[in-house]
Image (cartoon, rainbow, N blue to C red; front, side):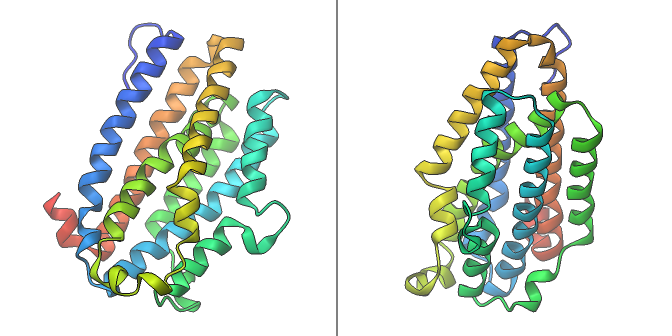
Length: 241
């Protein structure tokens, strides 16, 4: 997402769409092995995503706190409430995801095993969100979380559900998390977030360079997050990509 010449709103979205398309192509290639991996390798790969979900909620809360009152703050506040279950802890998305993990045979103790390399990635995002500009934070966790995350998850789900273990046990697996995050609801979230960010730009287009910087950083971190996972649990598949 290079922008040597001055950014305009139109050029920013064109560059953002191109960057997202490249990321989608990377994700499609990277996630292919999920369709064939033994369940012993698939489980720890799925476990690692739960830490992204947990940290995303905390980071989104921080971003909402830093944003000025307005449409973007209200929308992201609504999304945060949904992530937290809208007052019902059993509907909080990390709990919903943990029920998916349990349904594919992950023990409670194993759910706490986070890759140190990915802990570093997520902690780095939180530091940047706290220390950087608000506009960079919008790119990092607003665009990165709502507009980019859904791309990866949809591709992940597409390949994972073809895995022989998943097909054999489809009826007893708790798919609720995936219904939320790869269905119409999450697509609408992405569209609403994009519209709210567009309004945010229209109010003051001086935010564009920082917004672009945050989004670029989100793409790098998101790709690194998954590279670390595949290097740890499916190194032959990672080497082949």
